[in-house]
Length: 277
Image 1 (cartoon, rainbow, N blue to C red):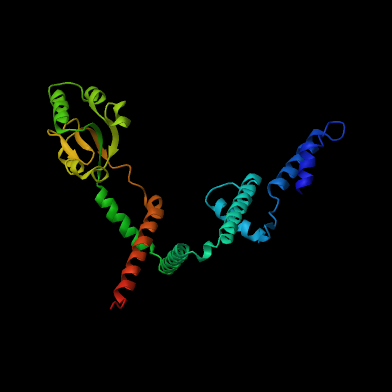
Image 2: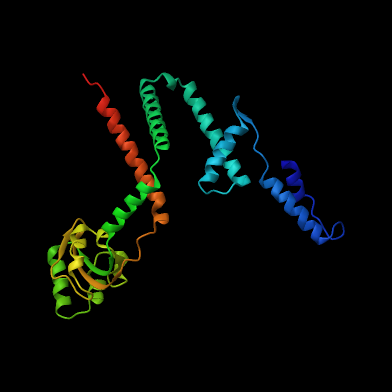
């Protein structure tokens, strides 16, 4: 098939004297599809056989993750396998299979793979019901709250710088103007300190816990310290919560969280039964 494809595209141009345009387009499409879907074949690397089935499995995993299968992808898979096998063969020639450190690393890798396989199997055998996922969703939704806050902030390195910025705002200077001049938070600097809409649980706790006590347009009366420095912030506006996802939107993430919790509990159960002397 490869030679036919090469001949068709490289050495056999089709002109109107041999075929009408419509038929030419049909045949070109058919040959293009045949080239794109040509099956991979077995090959060897210094005598080590790599089967088509092995390559197909890798391609299946790649396409499942969103990559489009193309001749270029097939060739990349083959070349990666060639490199991997050639390097492995060289390591084997060097006798590294008997190196104590390599043996320990191989054993650790084997242990990790077996542990992961055990946990994956357990999670698959103990899926979380939709009813339990709904409970998780409702709990998260309640914690999110019913109100979102449009915020502006001025971030500084020191408390003194934050207090000076706050004093300027309290004396009547426009918050956005002061933020553009003072804040060290580069993403919001060009927007006058505007960081968008948030629920209290989606910002640092030092600020989130203060939001319900503030009204639209209000600037909090003190600089607030957090891990990244100091902040002066303003509630620009408030609105009913809109950004919290629906259950269907949140479900994949909830399933991942539930699976992790199931695995963690399984590990705790196994550990609790271990006999340690």
